[in-house]
Image (tube, rainbow, N blue to C red; front, side, top):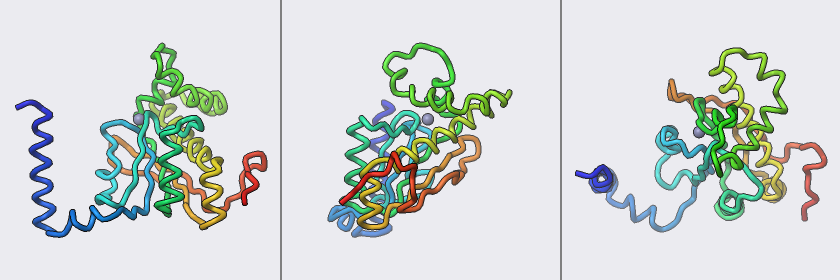
Length: 210
Ligand SMILES: [Zn+2]
C-alpha cells in the first residue's frame, strides 16, 4: 500500500468513529463554524495545532507558515486574521512557536536557502536587536530557544500593531493575544506572553480608528 493510501483508510475509520460517538456529528458541523480560537503556528509537521491542544473540529481556525511569522505583506495571513477577527469574532488569537524550529535555526545560520532567506530575514533582525543578550548564551540550543521565544513575542506584537486587531479591540473588546512556545521534547506548551484588548502600544503604532 502507498503511504498516502493509509491516510484515506484512516479517514474512513475516523469518520466512522465520530458517527459511533455522535450520529449528528457532521450534521451539526456542516451547518456553520463558530470557533473561539485563531491559531497562528509553524508549518512543522510535529506541531499540529489541534492535535497538541485537543481542540475538536469547529473549535480552532488555523493558519500556519514557516517559523510562525506575521508579515504585513502576507495577504494569506492578513485575510485569515481579518476573517477570524471580524467575521468569526474569535475571542483568542494564539501565536505558537516551538523549540527546535528549523526556520529559527536557519535564521541563526548563514546558509543560502533561496526564497526562504527572505521569509526568515525578520528573525535575523530580531537576533540583531537582542544580539548582546543572545551572544552571552554559549550553549547553542539554549541560544536557539531564547530566539524562538523572542520571535514569538515579536510576532505577537506585530499582530497588535495591525489595524485589524486594533479595530476589533475598539469595537468588541476582543481578541486576547497569547504567545506560546511548544516543546518538541516534552510535548508541553509554555505561555510566555499575553496582550489584553485595548493594551496601549508605543504611540507610533496606534491608529486613529472610527
Ligand atoms: Zn518551526
